[in-house]
Image 1 (tube, one colour):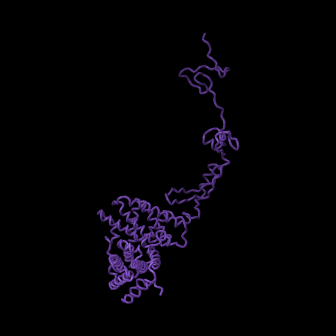
Image 2 (cartoon, helix red, strand yellow):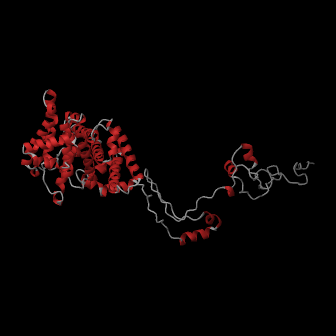
Image 3 (cartoon, helix red, strand yellow):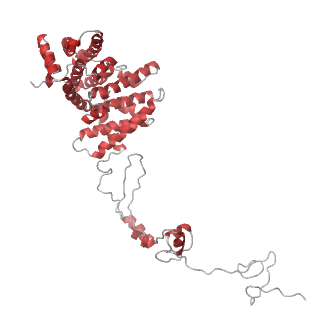
Amino acid sequence: MPSPPPKSSSRPDVFVFPIASGAYSDASVDQDGNPIRKRRQHAKSRSGCGTCKARKVKCDEQRPRCRSCVSRAESCLYQDQRPEKRKSEYVSLRASTSKPEHISLGTVMPKSASVQAPRSQRVMALREEKLQIPPTPLFPRGELSNLELMHHFTTHTAQTLLFGSEVWQDEVLSLVLENKYLHHAVLLLSAAHLNFLHANTSPLSARQTELQHYCLTMAGFRGALSRPMEKRNQDALIACSLIVLQHCWADASPASSEEQDASKPCTVNGLFPLAAGLRCLVLSTWDSNVGSVLADRVCFKQVKPFPWQFCNAAFAASLELFFDLVFEVGHGEYASGEDAFSAQIHHKQASERLTTVLSITYDRTDPECASLGLDVARYLILWPAMCSDGFRTLAEEKDPASLVLLLAYALGIERILPASFWWMHGKASLMSRELVSAVGWKLLESVRVAAEERDLEHVFDVVLGGIIPW
């Protein structure tokens, strides 16, 4: 007689049959027919500390610190002890000056309402609430975003620069996407223009924005210059060089020249080296036999030639005699020897190129002469690049005749160019004051007396008469 099946060791009072192979399986017993022990159902606690929740371990919920956090020497913070987040009634619209971010528009519900209120009530509240935009401006006061600066450049600043707005909007801006340093250069000039327009009300942060873009421009520009010039980057290099040169003109603060070298006029410190650098870039395009749109415009190619018809030939001849007289009076007893002869050649070359533009006469307020103003401004800003290195050396050594010629150059900018060329007038006025101080009233009086003796007093009155106090 077969023996009965063994009883379960866990519960001896329960008798079950073993489960045959392929038979129906009961979830309440195991393979041997023993009852399966089930865990008692319980509600999961959600009031544990944040540290235990993060580690996914059970928390004994002791206050102020649970045993697990005490044993691990960790901070123990419960939900009701956490500082509440700042409740916002509106959507925070923030503009980044470095990278544009996606902006989410919507009404933000208070924290208490989003936790305690049922979902249906929250949905209804969102439907009933209208989108509220704070009355504050999109950008904080005094903080200029890249978007604002680029918009101002395309709508206002580009119209006041060399070559006109079409060149900057159609040709230069297309290069911005491929050259980050040129992008910062465009924003730099736009920030400088805004600071000029709001000189009395411009906050400190606006000046800092201009300085930030200047540093980024120069760092990237130096890196680009260290690499070989190619067809795809030559126009970007020339455009950046033009912008840096125009920004140097726009910076009319006396501190800028004092930081460089207080012993030299501001013209020699900044304008001559930058203009010479632009000349080297343009000449590099000629050596590579690669066409460049900006290089041709700088050299008056592919555009109408210089408007010689507006030059007064009689006054130009008198100007040449006057600048020869300036050299004689400026050098005095040193106007002899080989060094004086070499200096006279450099002085003659610079004065002849300056005579061309100073003899122009036209109505600056006439709208029909707007294009003429662009040609004159182009010639004036490139005049330092057309001067020889010898003349630059004479100016650095404070040669009296060279300083008087520079003074006539600065005063000619104020006299000839329209006020729309804001970036040249401020620097020209600063140059005039510095050069008068460097030349001295004694030498200017000697030049005036010598001009009277040679019937050139009218030339003196036009070129230098505006600064004489008597």
